[in-house]
Image (cartoon, rainbow, N blue to C red; front, side, top):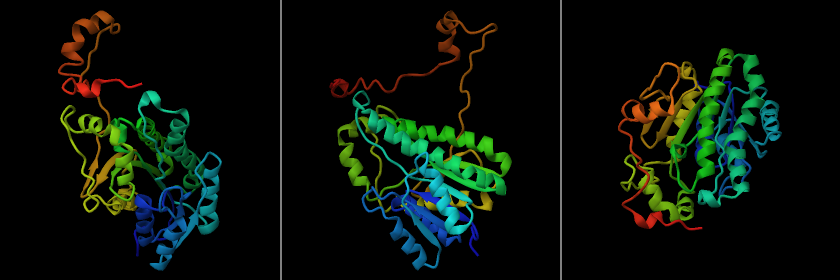
Length: 312
């Protein structure tokens, strides 16, 4: 008996990488899986993943429809046609380009948001009536650590942070119908890691100085594929779809390597309260002691003048 026997899952971007691992593990736990991938990434092949699942005794079907506003309904219909129901949606498809933010082209911005945010919502919108009518369902959205701030990846970072707001809202709106929605910020190293390193080489030092635990101090991420393989992401995602996680809704998790972490939700750190409303004079005289006490700007990089040369 699998943890998900009798359930049906849709996994986008499942033709390779992290999505493939989600699909394989969902199938091993008894779910019937619609493997969705449009096949643009190197090595991505929905049909090949279906073959892997069926060879292992599971049940799956391939789908190559893009999760556009209209395509999302076709993807859900494909799952219903193949398996008669849908219980789980894993929004995993991703896309992004790199460039200085002042050079970033509109079409690259639109693509990142169409895939990473609009496409996620389109699928949630399409699957919601089916989940709500049956009184149960689980949605897992793929956000990213890029949302914390990622030089060269402005569109991707913005879209992936939007996914967190999307997740929180879906949880609050659909929780009354027995539908849960959570998000993950995964970290894995795979076939695309070397491509990423080449594409972002020009920003490598800036990223190392601004994305680590101590801004201004160089921190090089570990891309060891043995320590951070895609397969280490899937257990959390699949678990979030099981009855064991019935009380987990609207939350975000960081996962990679041997670590899974529940992230805190935003809360006030320091508060300034003035009867009648805060004025500019209040902020001038009191903010430093009561609102922003101890804050410094860690991103000026004054110790690295070579990075402060602006190139048109």
